[in-house]
Image (cartoon, rainbow, N blue to C red; front, side):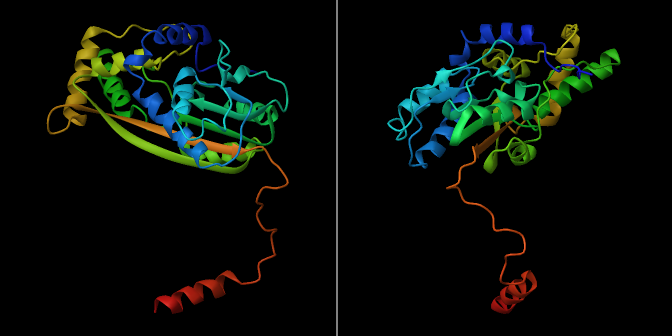
Length: 284
């Protein structure tokens, strides 16, 4: 039995297409995420000739790469963004040295499946890198809208998209067969004058919710009450509203014989208890 979809792919594609004309007005989070990936590449002193970019706004990564120390070692990114999302990734097996995604994987219905497909597309010792929004993203907006709608209408619709728990990232990479998995979480707070300004940025980024099924319009009285709740619970001393964004960065390598491997179970030459006792004696 096929599980129900969380996102409407047609609605998502339409909103993403509209956002591409306005992303330059609100791409600061995409820039931050792309710059983080590029800085990691700068520290990896090897070439990546064939690069696939799964980002919903691929020019952001290409622009960050162009001005970096890694530009001479990384090939021109090839944008691959299927209309229904990156889970439809269909590329030749072993055709890429590097796959990147900037703030797109949180829209993927089957993230483990996408990671497994990316693993097959990578050549041995190829690298997968991605930044995605994590579970704490927009928690203030979600709480304010839910509380206001429950109070006024007695029910609440999904006004903010669900986000995965970033701390599951390393396990997902391992499950997909990627080696040396790394997962980092970067949580930042952006401050706005009012919720409307926040939602304007979300539309410009293509990050408004696109659930399946009918969408109940957000009533004006609900929005006004949500603004009051937001201000009461999440405003700073100057009255500006705080909005949390959690950027989860994942990286993993297609297995290769030259990579570091953990020692086999039972091969340790020192017992853990003895090591801990030595540490305690040193501190004493």
